[in-house]
Length: 423
Image 1 (tube, rainbow, N blue to C red):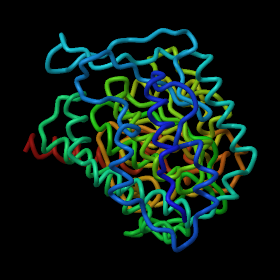
Image 2: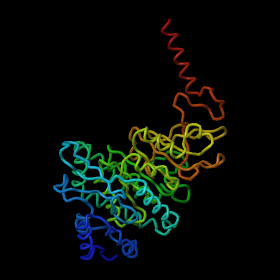
Image 3: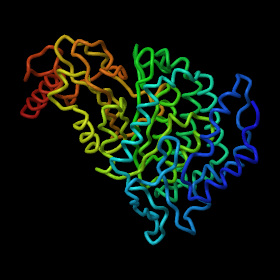
Image 4: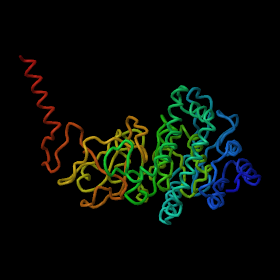
């Protein structure tokens, strides 16, 4: 595999920065050449190569910047300003007088461009043309990039989010371990062999034979490296094209993560990033061309997205639609369906549980027939616990209003306690 970092590429990176980091990605343009030169004997990126890409990987020279810094969207292989031209200024959490960067206020036109591009790539079956060995090679390179720039990325976290160094390290090294663990355990995970084994047939990002489809990954402000990288790495390894919608407070890190994948050799058609706020980008999570929506954030956000995707309380009987809340698979069961195992724990993106934050919610999939097997309608998830509160669960097939076993036990314990108090 010939060295890819030559003077021509360095000149393209300089020109890219001089034009305001707009236009085709200079590393993305080299993908076809790098992929063609790959073999099982290809070496990882060297420290010298990674250091030479500093001006590309970081969208800034320093943070906080001395000059105005504008973050871009990455759509269809190009870094773009929002169609509306509107931006919002993010300030330093420690001193509101310090401006960090301007974030695109993306709208429906930007979302449509990203979803259309991702849907086209998915339907082209390009994911089937790239072997697993190369994707693992890319993830190894991402891990090397993270290791090389550890101090820089820790500084980046703390400038955007108010964290101690210890908290920043926990966030960042969760991302680093996600790359190492998911890449290293992929062959076992893709066969459903969990480490440790959670339950037979657990599936994430995929059904038994293929990726789940175009994925929208919406991430929070509290863990700006760890949570996104679990999803991004898992989706990339299995072959899902993804669109990252990171938190606006972490726009610099969102850019660093995307560029780390591109610098590592990822196919630029599979990777996109859209920045934005609230209703402006709401269609990203509700577009029916998006097969997998991974949401980590408030329960209000998850409820809004689930409603937008047609997931409502009365629909769980008729539709095979899934939520993942607080690290547990949640699904309302109709009569005659398998109850599933009593305790289900989240398994990260592909392998064993890497992170289980509180208040974590994911919304998944399109509706499928009521008689479908244990996969969702889009074939992306297995089912599990009831959508009712823990104390209100009913047995499968129980009539509406009947008490479930947990409620009955709780009532018995309450009655026994009151009797003891009276005595």
